[in-house]
Image (cartoon, rainbow over all chains, first blue to last red; front, side, top):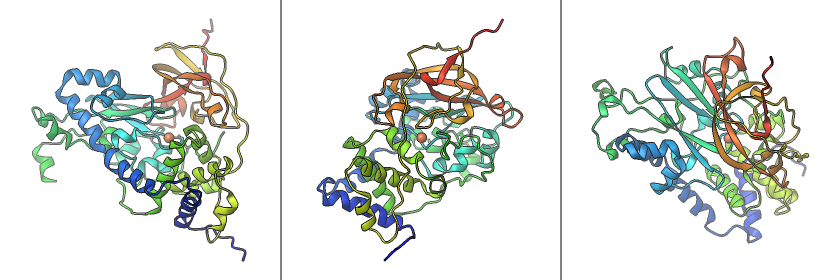
Length: 204
Length: 205
Ligand SMILES: [Fe+3]
């Protein structure tokens, strides 16, 4: 039978899996173990804990801004060997950093968690380098005209993460409470946390 | 290559689907795990992987969800490396199993040169048939070096299974309004640029 339609993705993926397994190349349990490891270890909470510590520990903040990869390692968070460098970009009230990978979808996934779908979508990759302010506004972040936007295109294997501005209402909070408010979007740069901890934010 | 994947600054795209809508496809984590298995066992490096995605036929690339690109790259490279065959993959499915198009020649790095933080540099007017990590939107443009990263294998060679010299990458700052005059929101756009893609800017007296 000649069949010219494209096979389903489920079938194609299982075909590659079974071809490798039948040769004895893919160890039983590898897929389950890898998936569990990825889902449990490479999570947004890692980056959030780094941010919260940077907000509460000035020495750590300096180390993190100087060498993000070592600062991550210090907290027990590893990066793949080809991610040789993690650059931490500090937002301020007047400077807003934003991360993208226009050529594919690179992120520091072991630190900020697997990239969300929108980050991998063509719309985000095409638009945020050229229409940063417009795209951010559509995503709900309407920056004042006076805010300088700095976009970072992840074209090499250096990775980036953003150190958001600590919300003023959270001054004095302990690091573990602060870590809970740090979102993945705030470490990519499509969100700011400025209003967190205020009565208006609590009503939402 | 000036491929379909080189999306930065392309126009006509609509709203970003933000925030993400949850979805649950069991083949997606499986595709991710198979790709991770291949990298872990050093069947291919990350530059070969990225280039295998870029080698997907443009219409396939643009219509494939993210994890289909992951799967297609893994299957293509494992076939090219002789680990599995295209015929057996096709025999295991109802229908076709599209793979990426063939690999062309790579190229070597230019002789080492160096640039300093704060230096104005120009991106070479390069047209590379194989893998290249220079997005088209910076070709021929001038920017300022703001960071220097430790060395990485030169991707234009590394993706083609050639001996790849290591060289630094420079975070180069461009003005969006110089990249796309009168046609961009005002911003600084920083790109991680391999040393071989840059050239000195000579002062013209
Ligand atoms: Fe990428």
